[in-house]
Length: 275
Image (tube, rainbow, N blue to C red; front, side):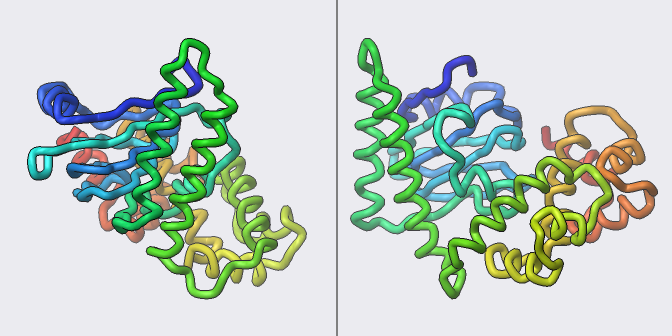
């Protein structure tokens, strides 16, 4: 994708075109937001297939391997597809957290908030169709759409007590540091020191926000990258493990199987057969 932003509406004709095409799992160099108003979606993401009926929201961050198969429901389909480069709007919660949990697809409630989302998409689309689109307007409308989505997501996926703003800031900083260092064999203490705090407090923040320990989040990030590498190149399992900070193939295999239920070799074979 060469442009910074694009938006279009997927309807019944688009469903038929996708069904007739070679629709293989792939990766994007851009972010993609799907707002499902009518129809359904068979979505292969995070190495699992999920079918979700409208109304729904689906967010695919750049680099994630995925495949979407839109389907008619009651003969209808209406899905807004919004694509944008990461630098187009400030970092969203979806972009930040998407590598650390399996919440790419969110089933929405048919309420006043969701009913306003297609209207926002229409406004964004109409502005994009202007001879000289005002991208500042589009940025504000898109930010408003993400705010509404996140508000509804929090209602549907409550985290218990409200997370304090300072904890959110610390957590975001942790993820940014992790994104720069997850290939290294670093543990909890390394990240706690970078954040000028104790390992215990960092663990408490991670448990509050994602219900995972720091170590689990680190391993989750490594696992996602391991899966990407296993299906996108022909490096040996030992080479991939070493690239992600595992000095021994046996330990890498053991960790991989514990978190995914398969050895790296079994996963690679299964994905090659599917893809």
